[in-house]
Length: 115
Image (cartoon, rainbow, N blue to C red; front, top):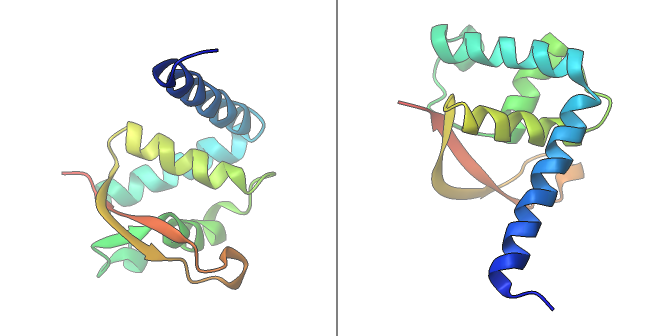
């Protein structure tokens, strides 16, 4: 039986492996989505002109018309995690309910562009 620290480490490793697998299964889409997100982070966009804070759902709604849908909806979460790790976006510490019906109003982190 492992202790809680070991379980937490194993849990993070499994999460990271899952994110990597999703990214690997959607390589072309992921690369295009990151390019678009990096461009928006650097230069802004008319769609993002007045948006200071946003959710992963907001990013999905803004990017989908530009990059299409990935093979797995989990790729959106992988994209967000990658953007956080690359310091393109950062969590504000706030959570809000998601808007789309299929999201069932679950709580999601609020992000802002990294400073």
